[in-house]
Image (tube, rainbow, N blue to C red; front, side, top):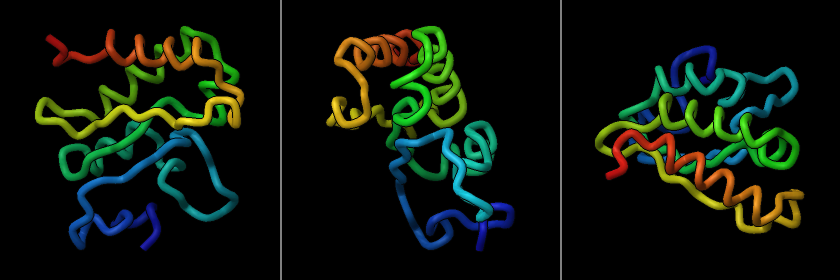
Length: 120
């Protein structure tokens, strides 16, 4: 089924998690996960699966401001995380390949740490 409809990547057959590194990407005419939008994905699947993700590696991390990175981190946690988990912050790994410096990765990490409502 497409995402305008009902199912997502096997959630109905027992998928426990999904890795998304391009949270703002659109793909041609086909309905895709990220075309639903971060908030809509959260409404549909928050609490049902675990999201392994980070700020968008093609749009946000390489090109946007520190404030935009902060805003996206807040949105991802607010939309996909739950008090019981549901969100794992990951690192893409090869920052050079995507034009992201270690400093920008640190900005993202700090943004997620500040936005984490369950951090003690």
